[in-house]
Length: 242
Image (cartoon, rainbow, N blue to C red; front, side):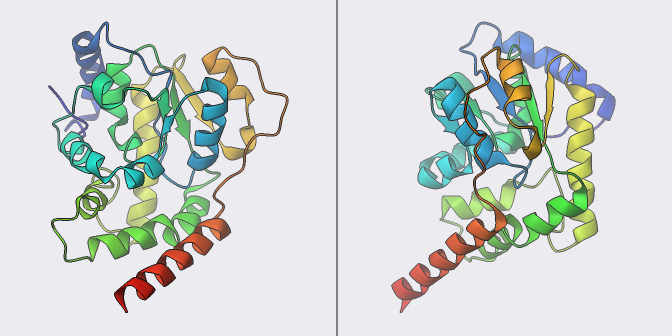
């Protein structure tokens, strides 16, 4: 079975999706597949999709709450995906890494699910948010000398197909643009849902065929909120180690 690794030739993407789709016919279907990178409104999307689908949504917060999932995600990223309908049983959709790292394989596994490409106004805007939040935590995790920690292994793998040097803004932003281009090239227009945080409910509800809720779209996990939580984690870690 082909995993979530990137095809060596760009033209092969659509063919790979068709082959995988045949292999996965008839399996339980996720309602929506998020292909966007972190810091593109994925926490807000998680909350919105929970409301719309009345079911759990896979997000990095799930991986952090279930470190036993990490080896499965690492294996999938390296080309050995699980039986997705077993591994993701109970989830109605997924957004954010590590779920979105495997967008190709998941798009093939669930060929009727719309693919949601969340993004920001520009690579520069995205990187400003990413650098002080997710990349900062990734730096801390990959620097840990603990090969036995499954979350360390996951953080070492989740951006393998995006960039090679997380301290090089040009490389990171090029990876962001490349992800957008790959998803747009490989997912058919009628299946692809482009979304930015200001777009709110309508594109998602239209893709899912559900009514637009009569309530504001959730806006969660701003950069400021993320940094407050990061500071709290650091204080807790310092207190535990002292």
